[in-house]
Amino acid sequence: FVDALYRSMGTRDTTHWIDSTPYNLLHVNRLQEIFPQARFVHVHRDPRDVLSSYLTKTWGGSDAIVAARRLASVFQRWFEIRNTLETDAYLEVSLESLTDNPASVANQVLQFSGLKSHKLPHSLVSNRHSNHARWRTDIPKNVLPTVMEILGPVIVQLGYEDDIPHFRNVA
Image (cartoon, rainbow, N blue to C red; front, side, top):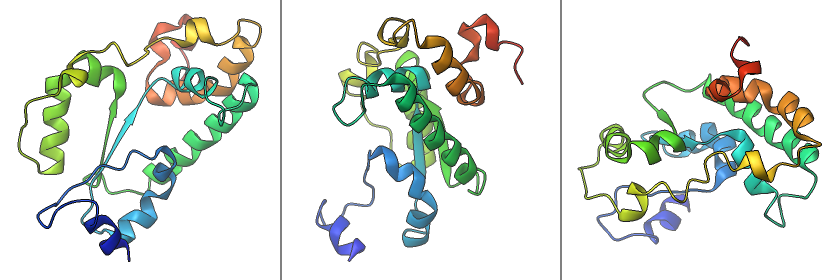
């Protein structure tokens, strides 16, 4: 069924596809069972910016603290799953590195995926859509300390603590 489903999405010669469903991240182990040769690329971004995005969606909720808790649990589950994966089965890159160095990161992803180099689309070369640091204006100031406490371990684990002095000494 799965083979027929994905085959219908491409041509007879399709060998790769991209599925950008965010919560599939939590099912990588099962996807790897179904597709043993699959390679997974996880493009992550600052969890505070993810939260900012959630707050603009009807499905994301309007309570920043509730959404931050949900987001933190998703990331913690991903970290558990990530630790079970073979390092040659997945690649993790930040959205910020992709928008700051699109050619370099795209080549890294292409090489990892076994794909040939292609001309990068203009939308990838421009960082105007990354919404980097939007959390600074989008997350209400009165809940920001609580949000930072909730997301702090995730922020540190993904390497986004450098822009906040409080997190610089957190292990």
